[in-house]
Length: 632
Image (tube, rainbow, N blue to C red; front, side, top):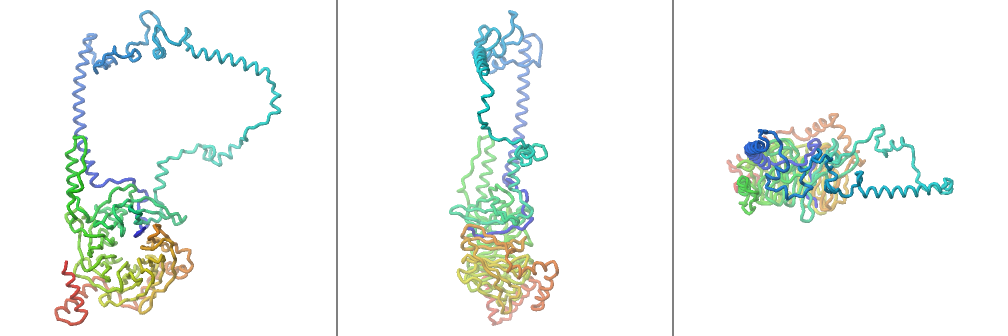
């Protein structure tokens, strides 16, 4: 099963991914070990110097005792080394007493025995060597060969060459066209007469993992029985080839993903945040092939005591012959500000890139600062409790970095100002919220999909009224599970459902009683669909996945019906058509104000109603929402 997918925009991923990256803790351990090693090496050098001085004095004494000369540089013989090691040379076999042999002539004037004779026998009675210095066995072999050669000569004399005329040639045909073989690279030549370089296996592996400029990367959260992992997949648009680049094992079942570009140190990179059934949010580096642990964890179980014990065991085990890993039973609950239940929704802020929003089954929405993950606050920036049931969806506004939309199983969609926990507006929906999305081309419109298949859109400038800009049933069977807008083509909306289909809609002319136009749908043959998304770096590519355990891609470029309807909008982006469309929209609605100012004015109006004791229903509704916030 694939619970969610997340595209990586082109140019974000490292074209030359690393094999492994040391974590911060590992770097600290290596620095500590390096400091300890340097100290030990200095001590060892000093000890060796003292030992050499002592050995040098002993050598001088031995040299004086032998020849009366103070030769300091005389090398030690093998016998001396053996004697120093308390081994009696006389106990060794004669073959190993090499110092007893010499290349010079012996006392009898005869030549010394060569090394070959030493290996075969003693000097007095060499074994297997005749007086001419030839091995006896070899001489016998030569005699036999001479006899055989004589016999073969006699046979050759009796053989007549004409007898071969009637014998067919059974040899295989061998071509002599060497130039042709070289051209076909069958001779090891490269076609220019030079030998080809041997293929390096390491280089070929690197080429397989390197990314090309036109490769599309997508990350999927996959679960098979008891094994969960993130699979980083690459799609080659030119060839249509889709393959798994590398995978990242996960400790728990994944529920949501969000892509970001900032790590805990504030450095840019290619990162993906993962929400699971655990209470923590893991952030992984997607540019590392053999990654073993996340770059950081927001919330989750508090392992500080276990980590401290591990550090103590490391520092105390130097010279003790090993490192004992601490027991993980010393965990002491959750980290400060952590979610207390599964993390069901994530959204990485595209404006303030160090901020992540999360929604949980504990009914709360939290904001995290990834650059403060190691601080005392554990990265928690704010907590919102405006929902009364599980929070299924969170989504940052595409251009206003402080506006956050949330959707919950309490059948409400809320709009929150991240700078103030009391600034919140809600609208009711007919069923549990499954997904929410902002229109990137008309950012004043917020769209939500619900469990009963209804897709609704609001103009957030009039969000407090609760009036829908448009609403329709996109999928009648099983409800709508996810929605996504095309960032490159205005008005293109895609929905997916558990009925195994993907549907495309045109929302450009919708509103004021007109619903989006149905452009077509398709069965993706990937089971019940849970996630769908457009590739942000290509206008015609979308991906979806679900219970079928396979990623399904749909390239709309080859579909004529979509080209006829949306092709002009894509081409017009460079010809100023977007400006014309914006003017057309501005004629229907008032000029777009600042969202923050709109929310602030609405809050001020609510306070005025409370002070004057207004009896309007809207005022009562506002007071109820205020009480809900006070429950924090």
